[in-house]
Length: 495
Image (tube, rainbow, N blue to C red; front, top):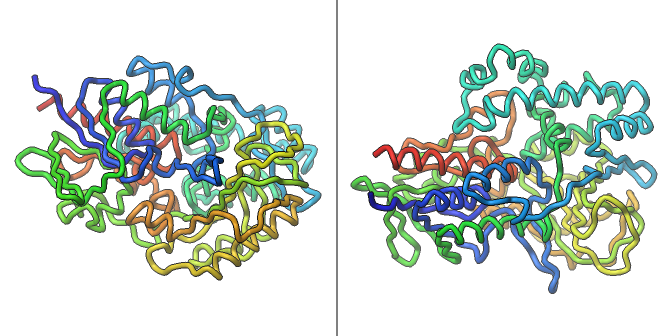
């Protein structure tokens, strides 16, 4: 039997995982990536010689990577050493109010009690129990399924799992559900932020997203060398298994003819294979950016259905004042107004800011040397509608830095020297998205079922990445790549 050949377009984590699995199964794999390095959104930027993670920074569900690597006779922990975080995040509302959330639930219960009182601590206990039940019911029936299906989810959950699934109403918003656990607005704000992990508003996203709390408590890991190192590791192991990686390559179009999948590069080169796994945003297909033959391969995502974008700043600088740990969140004074602005397509006047201090761990210690930072605020996905001008970006930067200063964090680097990435930049990096970083927004209970599965209507074409099922985030994108590889392998061997 001749060796099967699969082309993977895009070396994001979904494409990387697909390449590793297929190459490990003896399939000929060619990965085409227009950037100079693997990773997709899991990218790096440089401030001088300092390499700074400029994409995802929170690594959860390590067991998915352990299982995937083990399926091709590899030890993930040996390939990508990591340390488990004890502090999930440090939160601040002003210069006097700070709160740490811990991986250890009893420790977090005590912290919630000290921060907001015994009744809120009791609410946190119920919140943790319910988030675990939701995750337990959805992991096999929905998250690990190759395609989203409401009936499939109910069938997969079974009679025993259905009560867990219904413990939190999927028809209620996350924000409304949080009110049944917490009366302190700061805690609702803190746990409502979990919806932004998939680029959504807590006022519109379903309550089932509270499962993110359990996912974090199950383990947040710090990869040795940073998150971009994870992408490098998967690519390296894929190469060892036989996958070919071609960087700096621009794919012009894809089609299917005579039972062959065909990729045309911008320089005119044509590559044929048995199948293609597309690891770009599925909206690029629907917009015809990969050729008219692919327009019906994935459903379109209208601008008002897009997830959030972001404005990010990367820098290496000395800090003072605030006791930074690895993950830090500085909350705005009015959370509802934040999302009202985002929903109307405007930048936020008083933004919530996430800061990853890449050189830190769980414990704060004063530093005399510069440290690598990524700061991020949510922004509307309008990168293909209009260009944000320098005055708008500068105003957003000043407001973000002012919020950090109000919480006690000061940096030695002037705001004008920060390296900024805007929705326009993200749209250029990831065509067809408008800058949306998470595909379709998870607004309403139907949204999760409207993402495309890994199989498409086009024979020989499969999808992977954060814009397809099971959704955004590093482990979810990895699962989609694993599922796409499995489906492609099944179909190819059945011919």
